[in-house]
Amino acid sequence: MRPSRIVMPETAKSGEIFEIKALIQHPMVTGHTAAGANTEPRFIIHTLTVTYDGEEIFRADFFPGVAANPYVAFTTRATVSGDIVFTWTDDKGEVTTQTRGLRVS
Amino acid sequence: MTILDRRRFLTVTAWAALLPAGNAPAADSDAAVSGAGAKKLPSALYFEARNALAAGRTITLGRVSLDLPRLAENGNSVTLKISVESPMTAADHVKTIHLLSEQNPIATVARFHLSPRSGRAFVSTSIRLAATQNVHAIAEMSDGTLWEAQAESIVLLAACTDGG
Image 1 (cartoon, chains in turn purple, yellow):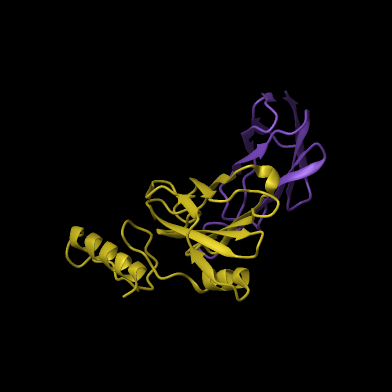
Image 2 (cartoon, rainbow over the protein chains, first blue to last red):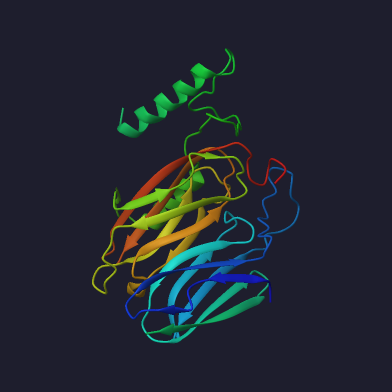
């Protein structure tokens, strides 16, 4: 599990659209060797999946052009109180997850 | 000239006027220059990625706005924002936003999959830019149509090559 950081509200009104920011620590090694500066093979986080109350609300496919410590911000609509689960997967199959509870009034 | 060609021509000419004589960047030079003002034509890899994504469909300029810094001091991390005009209903929403780079060694930078649950078609991320170039945000709608916006960023320190 890599260090990760989520920024989102703890509560929301039903139907309200709110923003979620997610960041995870990862070198995102590109594997790009043509310039001669790098000899390591590609090693990146390739997918971030976000579920809300069990249903996928957002998915990001990352490629080597994404900056190190990949950052993403997106929005979702508050429906029910429940867990928002973030799952990052990298090229070696390592998975990091973080869960945030949301209270919807 | 198309509007885009003319804009590029004027941009390059304006930069050329500012540089000392003998240093003017050529609009279609193949020399690897990652400095202010030098911009190359899109790479073959970019066109391959774009055509694969389009799959025969037209990509229309519009509905998408791409907020990318005009000047990126450090190409290792450039934060951008993408918004798409869309009601985000079950009947009419953005399914996927594709981010393509004209000059990076890999043209597809990221893909973001949205749904009606997104509420708004918005995404922000930080990317690497290997050289001064255009970046394209292409939105794939639920009805299969493709819309895009493009923006240029002048990169002072190239990602991954200039000591990245």
